Length: 199
Ligand code: GLN
Image (tube, rainbow, N blue to C red; front, side, top):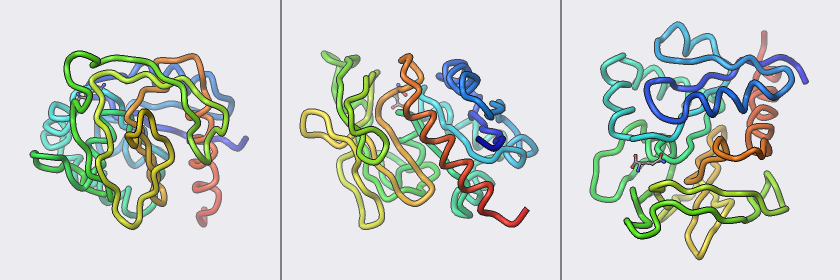
């Protein structure tokens, strides 16, 4: 494993959990990202779970929304978990979009109040063909995908993860489990992207 620096957008949400998962992986230097110099220093970025409206507000306040959008469009690997998925989506049912880089329509808090948190097991195609533990907390689901995005995981008939080029979105939180499968997969993507670039 060649060395990579992976950032976690660190305004609010499951920041510590992602940093802890990344620190268990060989070759990875995790880094909190709040400012432009930090964004420029990372090879890939995780957008954590939390409250998408709060994180979006802070992206605006720190003037990071547009630079982050540009880095994603230029190919930096990015993975959004839950609120992070909402930030990436081009459409949010009934609400304004944020980064709007991924060909997804998502519905916030889609599972409603009664089952707002639950755990399921399902394969994530291309990442793990054996079922992995999926933790949902006031999660969105993916209501529709455009031509460029591909659904890679479904639970009870609803799409809950998708890929598009350098982007991964999951409605669930691997950072709340002991299973490092998705973090390991993302790290490999970051490594592949970093070392395929002219240095
Ligand atoms: N309900 C949150 C939102 O809409 C997402 C929840 C989470 O990230 N666990 O932003």
